[in-house]
Amino acid sequence: MIATAVVATSCVAGNGSTPSQAQPATVEAQAAACTADPVSSSAPSVENSGLDWLRGQPYGPNVPEPLVSQTGIVAVLAADGIPAIDVPTCLPVSGVGFLEDDAPVVAIEINGDARAYPLEILTWHELVNDTVGGEPITISYCPLCNSAIAYDRRVGDRVLDFGTSGALKQSSMVMYDRQTETLWTHFNGQAVSGDLTGTQLSFRSSSVVSWGDFRREFPEGLVVSRDTGFSRDYGRNPYPGYEDTLDPFAMFITDAVDPRLPPKMRVVGVVDQDDAVAVSHDRLFEGGVVSFELAGRSLVAWNQLGTASALDGRTVSEGDDVGATGVFVPTADGEALTFERTPDGFTDVETGSVWNIFGLATSGPLEGTQLDRVVHVDTFWFALGTFYPDTGIVA
Image (cartoon, rainbow, N blue to C red; front, side):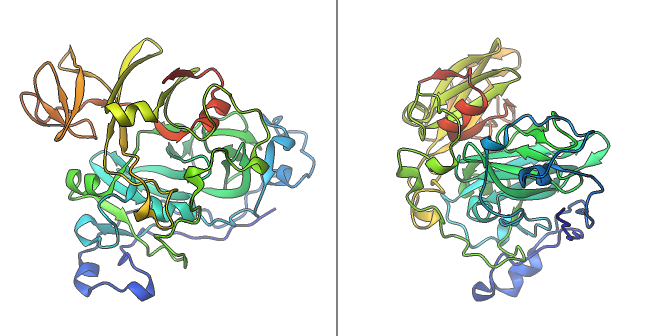
């Protein structure tokens, strides 16, 4: 049994720098604090947990049957070999000097509290346990399947803290919670081995956008800084060229890959219970707007140019432009809207209002109107097609 002894206090502001990249004291003075729930400081009192099962130890009599086979899980590192961030330090938008305009960040806004989590940091840590807008969440990023997903980390009356298990399911991260050491598959937020097997985490709407877009939309927002408590070469891509390879790492793939699309094709995935749709990134990147149906709902996906891939160049700033995406319900004031990408953002044909990548009307008759955001994920096809095998394709 692994005992993870980590105690988090309130998230304190950092200066966003490594020792060799000190920033002016005025920037540090501007830094604002973000808060995080305390992280578990003791080992869970469970027998034969998901982590034990991963090591080949037998299950106890009262533990639910795993939802995955041991042959379908590939152990690569020890648990916490990639350390999660449990005490994220934050900078105000005005105090950030280490990000290029096209740098990709995971953006989330809850109850008026907006946060940006740079992929140049998430690539090295994969998980951030945080509290945003008073709600405990986990931001997760799996570089190998190219997916950033946000979860509500409350399960019943528990608040869970997540760490990396060191294992992969179909080249997708497997997490564990420190309270019960149950294993969870990152891509669909499901508990697959341990006391909480069968439990489903709730997703929170987030999107990967450029730093420039986040900065303009949320000038009062907070940004997780490079002051993580770990020494990492933030800004460097540890997976250079991975975006360009045709296939994922074969050693981590245990199940057949859906052959309808190339394994590493970028798609925008949207899931509604048992229904899922994959929108081809190529089509979306070229045209800017794709309308589609899912579970009887009309939805629209957007792509705005200007966001770099985190997996392409030697550094994140050198990545090819893959754009930022958003998925929305295209209705405002009871009226169905149709959109086109324009130099200023996205314009609806019906009123001529202009909308930004976050679904907010910034000018025109509907200025100030917010479209309903839809949970979505930018990812590689092999992951979406594995976890949601009946996915419809909009190519």
